[in-house]
Length: 179
Image 1 (cartoon, rainbow, N blue to C red):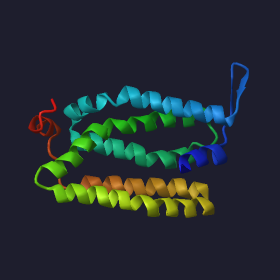
Image 2 (tube, rainbow, N blue to C red; image 1 turned 30 degrees about the horizontal axis):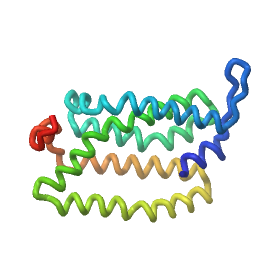
Image 3 (cartoon, rainbow, N blue to C red; image 1 turned 180 degrees about the horizontal axis):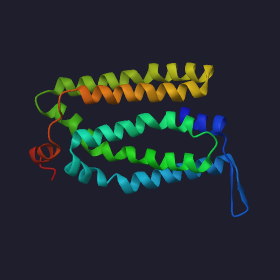
């Protein structure tokens, strides 16, 4: 919600392509199309990247892309092309989805069901206050909200990297017959 508000209200980008004026709604729609296209193309590559670089690296990359996006969006200013490229890069966040799903499933399945439930409960419980805090920050300054979102996300990514090593992705798939 805040991303839409920020891009539509603060950035309010319009463009001209081949002499045709595109208002901010059309430009935002094009940004979303770029993101969705990159996500659709890159999501299937997630499993291959995990095999090549490991679950931890793939998830870390996905987290960093997600965390850096709001801050980079702020820094992009009014450059339509830079914002379009950022939305494309933001679509890459789905590369880590297969490893993330398996990791959470493994928390639940590997005799550690409480850890899996706890993870989901804490994550879902943080949604409500994060929206309230986000709304308060947006009221103070939309730019502050974008920068704070990146800082919190990068702290989360750093925390993830400090957690004990994840099980090997291929082992996870072999254990539950997903290969």
